[in-house]
Amino acid sequence: MAARRLSSLLSLSSPSAIALASSGRFSRWGRRVSSFSTSAAIDEPINPSIQIDHTQLLINGQFIDAASGKTFPTLDPRTGDVIARVAEGDAEDINRAVAAARKAFDEGPWPKMTAYERSRIMFRFADLLEKHTEEVATLETWDNGKPFEQAAKIEIPMVVRMFRYYAGWADKIHGLTVPADGQHHVQTLHEPYGVAGLIIPWNFPLLLYSWKVGPALACGNTVVLKTAEQTPLSALYVSKLFHESGLPPGVLNVVSGFGPTAGASLSSHMDVNKLSFTGSTATGKVVLGLAANSNLKPVTLELGGKSPFIVCEDGDIDKAVELAHSALFFNQGQCCCAGSRTLVHESVYDEFVEKAKARALKRVVGDPFKTGIEQGPQIDNEQFQKILKYIRSGIESGATLETGGEQLGSKGYYIQPTVFSNVQDDMLIAREEIFGPVQSISKFKDLNEAVQKANASSYGLAAGVFTQNLETANTLTRALRVGTVWINCYDIFDAAVPFGGFKMSGQGREKGIYGLSSYLQIKAVVTPLKNSAWL
Image (tube, rainbow, N blue to C red; front, side):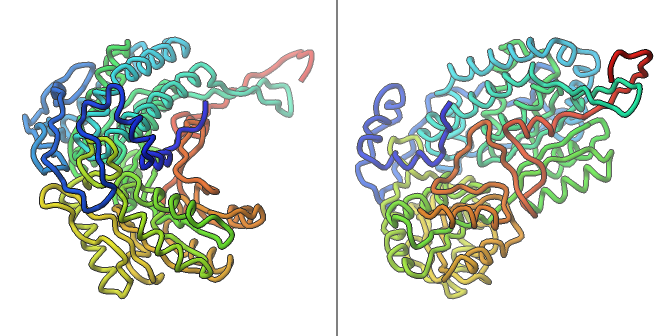
């Protein structure tokens, strides 16, 4: 299957793509946007035609209230209004969920059924999820603010593909027969850990759900999933679909709640055998410490980034501008691997800056349920204010604000696509993760300086390289201290391609065959041989 491209959303800016997006079942979301400009009015938001049915915790196959009876609001980023109130899980609810997952692993059918039967359940779920694409994408957009076209046409199909990918792996996981020096038969067994605690972020709720739940279940583990408090709705909905597909009770438990309560309890729980967390580096350190200070459970971490996008002098500048634009502004800039440090060769720097500014001015910002929209609101007021603070910092530190820099409209968390030039390495906007629609452009004079600038970061998640020279591409591929290097492309997230970071961007890998190893333990079994015909 061809690689799914998040960056393929670039094509939505073309007239033919907009016409396509306006056809079929997705056309009911409203009128076509006719002006590609950040000055487009933020009209009265479209009211999604979906009923919110699942706001409780999902424990042992049942939707139940939090033990405390508490709820919290989940907000519409377009307006700040309450979408629904969701059960607020805390330590007691984590205990209940872990107990259900433990019983399902120790006594239930999931780890004892054949791997083929597990795969059939996962395949049925993928088929059912695909049938409910529009409803799931609606929840994702409403709760998160990302464009509906992005959720429905790119992300949900990727989630479906990820579950089919790992469903296919379920009955192909096996150990080895190992030759030994002597009269012994040696084999290895690849066994599930038991109860896996999974903590997902708010920027790609269902995509990260699939990256973690898929391999964990394929390997035979049971799961306690903590959703981000900003975006709990879609995970609850699709987990209901999973149970309709035949998943036994207790295998997948979902607890909505906050990091210091539910998240900390899951990370430090003595009966959780494996932990996987995606989020900020600061929170990742806390999670790692809680895991270490409890039962030394192994932890997979996918954390922050400040990824360089290197534009060499030999490339097509128009194509480089478009790709760099997508690398940074995709998903409102709320992407851990966003190409947030645009490094451009000095010989083409001025031309690149002017064209990057022009492209940002054409970016369509508005209600994410409308067709043709490229950028919706930021997730919430906290992130909104954080981004504006970084923009002020860039101005105060002497960077040139080429365009943007302000709130768009008077309602919701919309920010103008923002471009800075003349950005110096010591500025906060060049060093810290902004997680918003802010492009920082700086220059380099040769490859040695490009490598030095790119690697001068505590992060090492990803990098982009734009060049037509194979030797240059090979040089940079090996020199960059990052987990993923995209050459003349960006945001390629095929199910089989591993993803993870160097340095403070995390540890371990997700997706692909490498993602399975995070949820398996290796056991060596040694048996004496007598009168063996061969060794």
